[in-house]
Image (cartoon, rainbow, N blue to C red; front, side, top):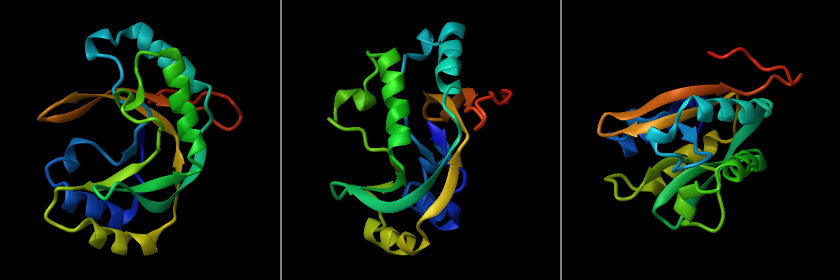
Length: 174
């Protein structure tokens, strides 16, 4: 996933209100590939391969551009240009072809930052009306996080992969 720390107070406020139990489990993010490998299969070699693959990608600017919906059940903010995210997903799937986005359920990958989903006590349309005037939000992809679920406690970061500087020189790991 690419963490999105710059979502602004309005989006974060709605994320907190719409999913009070799930909100603290994972930060605002745009998923690149889920599910990935079983945690027992993630070893130093996998981490090194991910680092090499992701380290070839330069940091990039993007906008949280507009709101959209999956059916009428999931409200999300769409990043533009979406191609940077779908390109990273395609690179990951080429390397790990057994790891299809969302288990192959959908024919097309749609990069998104989920704001909320039904069922919830607050109408998602209320959130959409409040968020829309705040968009676009300009932000930057600087790293990719590999996380695993440790429910009910939440998600744990296994590794962080810095994206390359514009010069093509890798940034030191954090």
